[in-house]
Length: 65
Image (cartoon, rainbow, N blue to C red; front, side, top):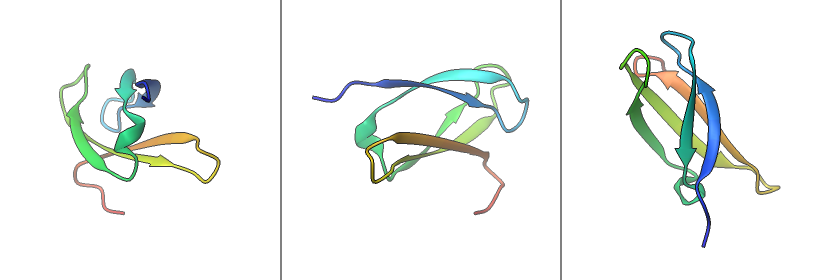
């Protein structure tokens, strides 16, 4: 059983640091969650590298890869 991991990310809209809980089982997935400060939708990309380290990247909903 894997536990939720707390990560700090910065909102791509307002720049505020926000703490989010990430489920390592969501690795390889993308989801949208509203910023806790400005309420704009943030796209989250969850990944795990070859060493097993969890990483979370964020972008605004209009930003392309």
